[in-house]
Every structure is written in C-alpha cells, then in structure tokens.
Image (cartoon, rainbow, N blue to C red):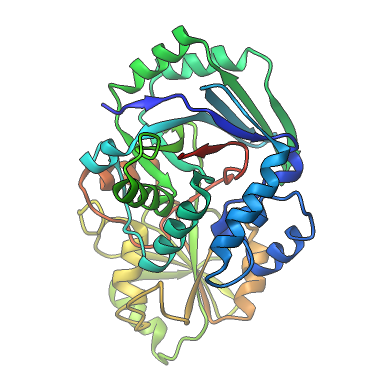
Length: 379
C-alpha cells in the first residue's frame, strides 16, 4: 500500500570519517569535538550560527560534495551491529502522498521549533540528509530480498561508535521491481524521525517538485529492531508525603535483588534505594495502558506537578543501555529516577493504527542509525 522507489544517492568517499550520529542526540560538547574534523558531516547537519546557520549548511554541503559520489538510481541495504545485537533495513525513498494518506503511520506529534529548524535545513540543502526510521510488520519476502542483497559485496564496511556498519547497493531492475512490488502491499510505521518526515512533507507541499514528493527512509522488519527503556529523572521532589502519595495508587515495595522491570512494573531510585511500584489499577486504552502513560498520569503530573514534560526543567530523560550503577550516580545528584519496562513494537504499532500519540520520549531505538551514509537530493 506504499509506493517506494530507488534514488540516486549521494555518498561520501570517506564514510568512517564523514558519518555522525543523528543530529538530535549530539550534545554541544560532542559537536565541538566533531567540528575539529573538517571532513565531518557535522558541518552540514549542525552548522554554526543562529539564523545564518542554514546558509552555512548550504555552503558546507557544497564544500563537502567534492568528497562525495553520485550513484545511479539504487536501493540500499544497511546493517549495523556488534556481537550483542544487529539490525538491518532498506534505505529507499517513499512517497509523501502515502504519509498524507496515513499509510505511513506516526505515533507522536511534532513540535513547532524543531520542525521549523528541519524545514529550513531542507530548504537550504535541498536534500534529505538524515534517515526517517520506519518499520514494517514482519514480511518473509522482504527479509529474503535483504538476504539476497547481503550475499553480494558491500560498498561500505567500517567500525564506528562501537558498531560495524555495512552498506549494499543494488540497481538490478528485476530485483528492484520485486522489492517495490512487495512494499506496495504494506504499511509503514515511523519509529524515529517524525520531524524529519514532517519537514520533508512541508517542503514538498511548498515546492512540489517531482523528487520533492519522495523522502529517504530506513525501513526495517519489526522483528529486527530493539527498543530500550526511556527513563525519567526528577531533579527535585517538593512533596513531603511523596511515598504516602504513591501508596494510594501503587503497591510500593523496596527492592533488595535488582532485575529488569516487567510490563506494568515501574522501578524507582529514591533515597539511595530501589523501589518497585505496581499499579493497583491499569487502564485498558492503547495509550493509557502504556507504562509511560501510567507513570505520567498517576505520578508525574498529579504528585510531582509536572504537566508538560517537554518544557518543565524539573524533569529530564535518559535513554539507552546504561548500567544500574550509572543510574545510581545520576540518582545521587537528583531526587528520583523512574526506570521503566521498554515500550514494545506491538504497542507502538497499536497506538499508530489507532491514530493516537504516545507520551513524549516513549521509545529509545538502539543502536541509532548513522547520518551521512547516503543523501537524497531533492533537486
């Protein structure tokens, strides 16, 4: 049910040096270090300056194009992994008409400031420079096509950020058409990259070029992705009856033997101890029944008084695979940490199918996709 197509990718000659993490997980300190390398994609993705940064992005893109090559129209397969975990998927273009129709389903709303930032970035570079991470429900035919492609020699193979990155390119007409035919019966779910997708859509609506109708995505099978918990840290708890308040809606128990939380079990680091919180009642809604929703609706907003987790400075988020010891170090400098069971792929798909939105920061897909493996030019 979605239209996909091959595209002429613009690729770096030196991917190990050029490629970086996604722009939205690079902090200021890391950006400063990356900018010391004149051949890094950071100069395009997160250029210096205020409003002039978009002009700088264009200028840096033109400079760095000298170290890039343009492929013939192709479909790519990208694999990223290490001894612990790996994932793979197609890098391909998808029609924004299908996003407009709801065939490419979202599970969160975009925010105006980061959306406008990415729109201006696309207008300056005339390119999709980052991957929109999507998933499709397990499809054995597509998985077999990836196997066929990965049996061929890769065009990239290098180590970075603790993972091996491999890229394959195919432009065989028969194989390409088979892949496009299989995709035509599927729906896609946005896993990560809602702002990148929405900004591409706004650019298309404004400029309406033939290539602008398409956006570059990474499409992976939903049984080949890993979601880690996205945990909440509270800087200050002013409520003196905090534990008593928790007891109204949760069974509260101090933990002496740590293990990963099960579904509908919230773990909390408070007063230098770990606690287990089991809700006494669980809502049945696809959103209301999520652990992140239970935490927000029963603790963060009513007890801690935090209504908008995106704007309130008393809360911040820690995603990824950190050890309990590191969480305890964070907890010693803050009043509480809420450690969650990760949101599942099935929960994400159910929310998206229902046309609803998850609470902010509900999923942490890991490992993050590299930016800079290939760009999609819109003109």
